[in-house]
Length: 114
Length: 111
Image 1 (cartoon, rainbow over the protein chains, first blue to last red):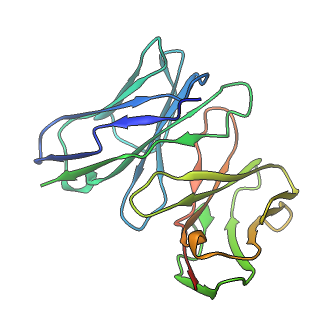
Image 2: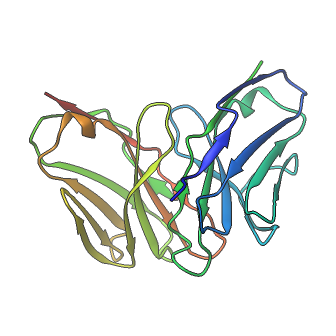
């Protein structure tokens, strides 16, 4: 069984730029969720995608957007980067309708905004 | 009041001790309760999953949920240095709600 993978592992951007992070779901899963984890904090829910549509969203502004593709892989896009966007971005996959709450995480992408 | 409260530690115990980790939450509607382990600079790893109240055991790990007190616990028996990590509790309403995490407790097992 293939686990959740994310790319890139690390990224450095400057304030105002745009960034795209990528995630491949665990084999057999159909739902992808994205989380932001600041240093010393627990992950914060950004949004969830199911059937290529946003299925739920946390308290993040519209400049955080996403996509899910037919193969269940996903992208997180962040526009107009701010210094506070520096964090570990985590992707998690799950199977809707069967223990959806059991989410399996990838290794994360560490983003630094200068 | 935050939705999930968790003592960040650090919690330092000797090898072989029983470890008790805890979280409290405020919304009684939460139905799904999880514990994740996160090593430094890695993604969270699912340890335990519980639906509603009760106990669940898996090897050296036991998860307890007391919905009447809004209190969840993770016990680790015969703790090992390899258990040193940050332990995150997570709760969910279900559906498309997303997981709500505590801050995480940094656990150190001393050889």
